[in-house]
Image 1 (cartoon, rainbow, N blue to C red):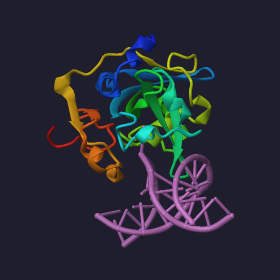
Image 2 (cartoon, protein in one colour):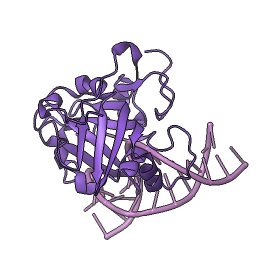
Image 3 (tube, rainbow, N blue to C red):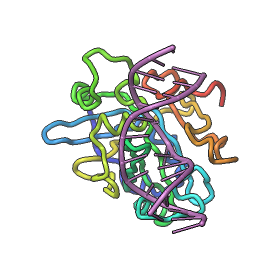
Length: 206
DNA sequence: CGGAAGATCCACT
DNA sequence: GTGGATCTTCCGA
């Protein structure tokens, strides 16, 4: 398995361009001697200032979302609902606030370790391990300590893998952003069609 | 300083 | 399908 990291230039493009290009790539996490690999199957783009669903909406800048304004190629990790961590890849130029939320992955290596970290039994259904942004983070042991880290680092990176062709990509509105007004309907969610590890069945059409 | 909301998940009906 | 868990963060007073 080829685990060479994507170059940081990959992320210095708009989030809505990076998000579909990340599906099929390999998210790699090193924990001690163990190497965990998730094949990304679902992502969402967040556009920054003009996007009411983004943590950077209106240029909002707080200690919590500071790393969202780093140049593309950094991790943005945030805590939500009092118990969950979520992992993003910052995109574009510094101070733009664009990012891609990594929503779901398919275990390729280290599945037993991921199951253990998720507190699951031996037999699980697809999607239980990393079929959701908080599940993905928990399976890989991602927390605040990785906020602001570079995505070609020693403990966390995204490898080239093989991007999923447009034909196999489903596209639709993002999950959990009903509060975002018009932006709630923007089709910025991308998932591999018919992949059972996706957090929810792909949108009917689009 | 209080209150409200949140890029979610899980158990239960 | 619905509601509860759980707590950090932020904003307004």
